[in-house]
Length: 370
Image (cartoon, rainbow, N blue to C red; front, side, top):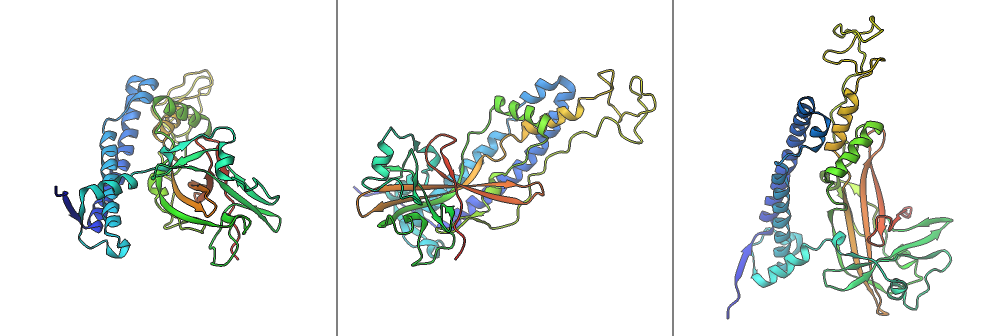
């Protein structure tokens, strides 16, 4: 029996995936603008509930193109791995049997967020620590859950910490060979070596449905339009072993439509509200109460919140699987979130994931550079 052979150039496939992602980005921006216009029209024609529950079927095209880009990129990485040449050989034509490519595609499609498991009482400590003490005063590990790796093994999730000069730190930044590392508790727990590492971008929470978007809409009427990062923002995060994350390019918050003008505006057409004949309404607005208040701005804020409820749903991640010479295994699962401060400047926040629940996280403080 002869195996089926296949061949490809990884860089050509990666270029295709990048082009598709660019199309997705442009299409997403166009659909957001289109949806805002349609939702405003639906609100005026059919009311608030109809506007908040309207969904655009064209978003299925965005999801299909995203899946296509992910699949092509996974196949490209599979051919690159099968060729064993790394980045320097991406332009070469790589030939391999289909079964090998399938195995690498399966590994490339593995995502950490889909493989988290809770730990039974005592199971995490037994697997992660063994005979090693849970804490040595100023150093130790936090954790509770497990991560099923691409190899099918169950790795206990750990979040290390050490205290240096009175400050607790959780990860290295620009670690130099020979220097103490937070990952082995500054030499207190030696013998670790990396088996496999995967760095990428993931969706850490499900896309909100109608209910979730309605809650975001209600919140926006009180707190104002939402701000948050898109998947493209997160893709700008650069992660490297032993370093704090950085940004490859400057980011700005996703623009959202401004709310309606205030109820009273200078030089507005004369539509006087009750009991205040000298104050002018903007064109087209009418009073719904004796004090002349208008719900237009509140509704617009709600529509904006509904449309942008998915902001902040992606993170950059770095998962390291390690083994110790004493037989222990472990996983360090680092997530990096992108946010924006009041000035619109991008901020990066890192956590260790220690289990499947939302609160199974340990904020990361990076060690100062030596």
